[in-house]
Each structure stands twice: as structure tokens, then as C-alpha cells.
Length: 202
Image (cartoon, rainbow, N blue to C red; front, side, top):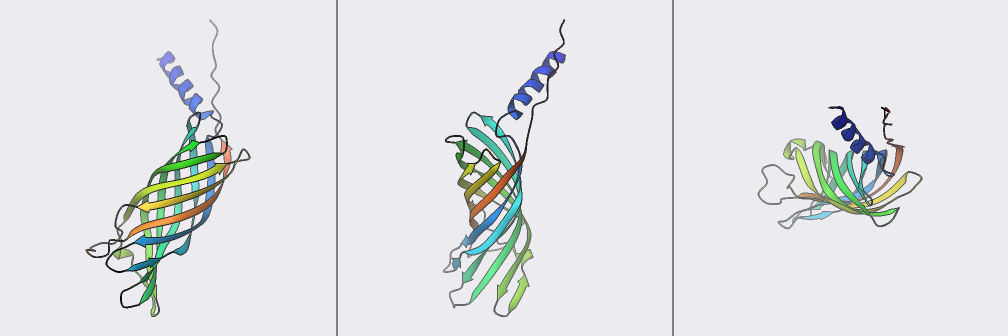
């Protein structure tokens, strides 16, 4: 069993000693709205996101990056009768992206994202209402973006999220789906170092 265990440890160590592997934090601002039908016009409104990520190098020019974040999305709506309202939704999100590096710094990103609804509220001229019960618990979609990862540990990213699932329950008319344009700044606080393998001489 020892040779197999040593080989497995060596493979894990090789993956974790990559230049880019490590833990980090990130946050940023975004603009979001929803894609809707039936004559409803949605407008972009500002939001924010914050969380952490773990980057694991998967090749000479590739990283796999899972993240955990809290994100405020939403949209402004103009109904056919001219009435306006804003909806804000708060999600716990888990994006998973693959990053391909064009050099040591610049990269492009693509992946998948899951989100769990924490709360939703609707604001209108006559007040604010909690509408969490009207929204689906889970949201998911695709992410696409580009970024720059500095040697200092600082990184900057521009990302687009396209929701694939309608977010309203019992809706047969509008079918709104989340979408967002996000600008983030992060910092890779620590890098993973490989464990040293002790070789015994016979």
C-alpha cells in the first residue's frame, strides 16, 4: 500500500504546487436586470457581491476556480400601464469557472453557477414588500468573463452571468431570468505549498 499512497500524495502535491494555486477573497459592483416577456421592460440596477475563492491550477495555462459569494441582484420594471417598481434579490452563490491564461496575467473565463435565494423584496411608490415566497429557491446559469491575475496576488475580473431558469414561482406569463454584469477585485491571500516527501534510503 505504501507505494500507491506515496504516488497519490506525489500527484496531489504536484497539482498544489502550481504557481497560481491558493485561497483568496474578492468583491465588487454589478449591474443586473432580468430578461422578461409579455411587454414588461426591465432596467439595469446596481448591486454588489463579496466572497472567497479557491484557485487550483489544472495545467500550464489553466485554472479551475470554485467560489462562494453573497450577491445582490435585481431589476427595475416598467409595466404596460406605466407603473414602475424595483425588485432586489439576495443569493448565496457558488460559481465554478475554468480560466485559460493567454500569458502570465491575462485570462478568459467560462463556467456554471448555482445560487440559493436568501430573500427578495419589491419596492414601489406605495412602499416595500417582502416577496421571497414568490421566487424559486434555486437559480442557475452560465458565466463568461475575462480577467488579469497579478504576480502580487491582486486580480481584476469582468464577468457576465446569464440565468437559465425562470426565477418566479407559478408564473406562466413573464418568465424572468437573472442576468448581471460584474466587475470584481480580489486578492490571493495564500498560496498552497506541497508537502515534502520523505524518501528513505535502503
